[in-house]
Image (cartoon, rainbow, N blue to C red; front, side):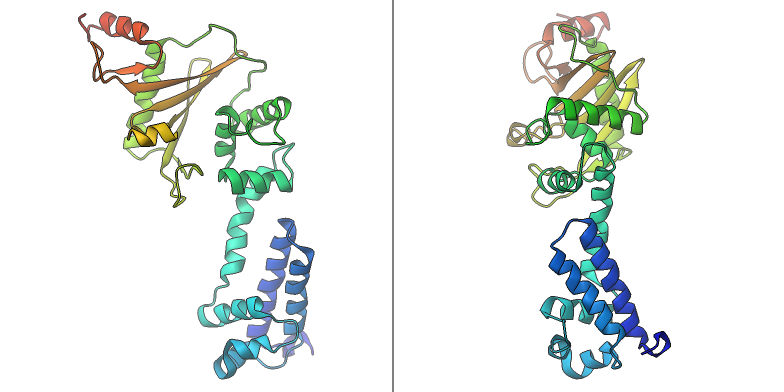
Length: 291
């Protein structure tokens, strides 16, 4: 059969099956499954009877009787005939985008990319960067300190943020005034819905993208701010109150949490947890607090 003799609908389904096979192969799927789609595409190119005619007259059972077409492939053909869409192909295409982004980072191959996507729900380089700083990568097998440090450096360069080498300098902390200023910026922009939102894997059974994330800087210090998504924050209903700040500068990095105080002279004030005395001094100097 020449290409001009192939029924158009058969040709269209064959093209989609070939793309589906390519997507499966790129995602390291079972070779037999990849081969099934390729063989089905070849069979359809040699089939004289249009598959939409088979669907109308015999339903999925008629498609299932075609050589090399099982229930799954028959359902995919029926979906295309009835709607012009092939959900399995669209799902694989959507899934391929984040996996390709993750595989573009040196040190992350197909299997690690799949684990990051499946286990942590990571889909963007920004989400990977956050996981490299908040401890999630360190808790996964295959991610030692050197690999994580290399990933941090790569992402800092990709996302146009210089990456400081080395470990945190003991005792070196940003001033509370700066931390509280970053906290204000984050909460203001989150409330205005001006920040990208990620769908955290943890504590998010519906996979809803609800968690705003901010990348900003103060001088040479770089910050990532995000609402706390810990079980404790959910238990106490503080997911829109507790803000976790990750910072980096000149070989130092660290993490601080800003909360609303619920007791004592600082009640209702935003404070840096563990640095209450410094916060009290900050509010006294600003004239906002009389102790």
